[in-house]
Amino acid sequence: MSEWLQCIGCERRFDASEIRYTCECGELLSVERDSMPDRNLFDARLASRKTIDKSGVWRFREAVLNVDESEIVTHPEGSTRLYLRESGVGSRESELTHASSSDARPPTPDTRFPIFFKHEGENPTGSFKDRGMTVAMTQAKRLGARAVACASTGNTSASLAAYAAQAGLRAIVFIPAGKVATGKLAQTLAYGATALHIRGDFDAAMKLVREASDRLGIYLVNSINPFRIEGQKTIVWELLQDLEWNAPDWIVVPAGNLGNTSAFGKALREAFDAGWIAKMPRLASIQATGANPFYRSYADAFAQRHRIAAETIASAIRIGDPVSHHKAVAAIQQTNGIVEQVTDDELMLAKREIDEMGIGCEPASATTLAGVKKLRASGVMREGERIVCVLTGHLLKDTDAIMRNVPPERMIEIDATMDAVESALA
Ligand SMILES: *Cc1c(COP(=O)(O)O)cnc(C)c1O
Ligand SMILES: [Zn+2]
View 1: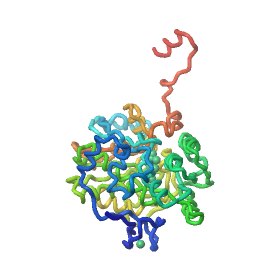
View 2: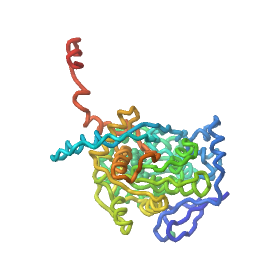
View 3: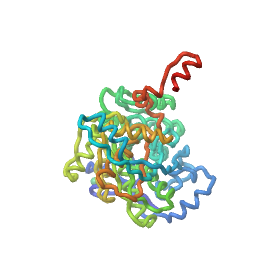
């Protein structure tokens, strides 16, 4: 079996062992291979006790990276749970519209429907980034890198730091100063990374790390690195396997730098072409309205690529110039997918609902449920369709976003007397 890097524009091929993130023509690269295994191989591994079979990434290794087993850097990651819950369109949203508008519209009827949540916050460092990082870090070691770097809104840096510690490589992260959730920064530092706080936004940090990695010979592990995408494909393959390869109608994902949207498109294309699934699910990529360059392009039928200054409470997707734009356009087109946007109020309300299911997620992840509600209400998603939302990060990743919104009746300070307890709970 062979693997190579291929330009998504001019289709020029490069050796997989070359350190390169873009083609001579400037376009992104993807990892391609000449054969795909039968899916029964992956099912057989579910009973295995081997570490690399327990990894939800390396269980699919023949379709991820052609590598000697001894070279793999794994925690292991993946093998996250798929939860079936119920949600609805109605009462909660009208609560929101009533709160924010003066015209008192009657509440819409509460329509309940089942919904799956694939919880990628259950990865070793609390986000899906581990799925790409295990592959990029394995590749970094094979290539003989001594230092690895990324620009990050927090989760990539935490993941990079953990895997670099395991691989024995120096970790350097470029983060927008003052714009990363405290828990993510603490996690990154604790694993031993050096953090460069860039005075600028994520997009400025991204530009700088690309230049720095070229100049200083540091291996770049942002999702511009095509090996990251190979690992992230397994989110989709694992959820298809969880569903016994009965493809859902929709897979819903938050969209920031568009690495995941790109990976999901590639995963679905490959699964369909290999005959692992009989029908193609539709992708729904959801952005925050304050960080919506991809939504704007979609609304123009992808006639233009937009670059904006991004602002949203969902810091993981506060990105105005997504690197994987062209790959993500292909992902939407090839899956008959759509792009939707939701406001910070809508995503925080959806987050509260996911949290109160006892599942929990960080704000960016909740764009999925907020998006589904909007798409159900507008009739794009129909009754009876099976929907899987991918929750990208763990609830504890951003506790500030929670503590700013605790309802006062939930957190009550009282004197240390039984009387006070009784009157507080009355
Ligand atoms: C990185 C991240 C995203 C955005 O994914 P992209 O691949 O950049 O589009 C969404 N949610 C969380 C929690 C993340 O860490
Ligand atoms: Zn090219």
